[in-house]
Length: 546
Image (cartoon, rainbow, N blue to C red):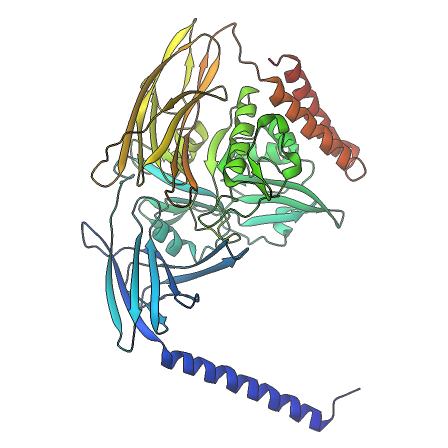
């Protein structure tokens, strides 16, 4: 039945009244707000800096900044997962910017990437406009040391990325322009795909975007909800044609295009199948569940937790440390099985409440920045992953990722420094998945940061891998930030590295469980990939040690 003329007039009148009410509220709010103008500068040089800024009033409301320059940019980011897990910030270009704040006290926090100390101030807003100059102190300069950062799991738009990368002081961004979530769908037809050109986008001299990257994140099979998991293809040259499953053709095409395969998270249902079948290159030691704000995914894949691994949980599920430790131990199990995956870090900024590059990977480039050299260095493992501290480790004078060939038992010297803006909790040297040395960090500080050196030697009788990791604990919250080097490998002929039985048992059981779960869903050819992975893990289990 069509509405009458009177009904239509009534509806129009209601809409006009609603619009007038909203407009009046906004005018009232504007009248009651006061402008705060901020200039963020480098504490040493006085140079204006791009940054990430937060503003919260004493009433609990969040406010977003606007640039005051005609050529300035401000990107608002507002993502909430829970009352404790959210990001409400603005990334800003290197220009003055403003907040419109209500009367009373407001808390302002300004940050820039990992290399600057954050700044926090409280302002009392009355009737008169306010101005503040905020000085950010750089506690370490990674470019001077020829280390360059990247985020390998990015969901920000190409339009926003120049602003955000500068604010986060990030050198390389690999946005997943092609994003497919349904089985048997080519990436070009993915519901989240945004076609990209095969060209390097230069943001600054040492800041670039490579937009040709793909995420296979399969949540449905044949139109029905059935999660398989995620894997990334990074740095490919043309759009990928293969769909998933199966995954072996994707790996073959990735190799043909000189791309890298990145394991998103270790506990996706199909993850342990992917590693041997695709020969995955990268393992995200800091993945997109590790945030600046509170840890959220406490029960995600909790059912996959191997009880024999002593992973920390509480009544709600994973603790933040438990989730990190689960990732570390899965990585170590795969290294012990001979899968020499290199570590990386990704945030999924754009989807989750986390700043771009909160977890990032630094790659050593002694000759200065070059994108292809950065990709090559990432693939070679000349790197470390961090959510806070900086870790410079050398192994017999060589970088992480090195491979040593010995004719017999030998000695490995592990030395270097860990730098942090807060005191470190501990430094650990890991051999074949076991902590073989714990170093108490130094009690003294550098000029603007804490610096702890380490110099340890180890007798190596069998083929082994070594890595260094360190942890920084917040004095009030107890939350951890970490850094973890890529491993080095020492091969001793005739004395191979064997995985532990608890590791291979987990890998065998993980794949067996997926075969059962997928029996009525996937085709025989697709299940054959799981069967091949199971055979590989069973053979490794046969040679494992107790």
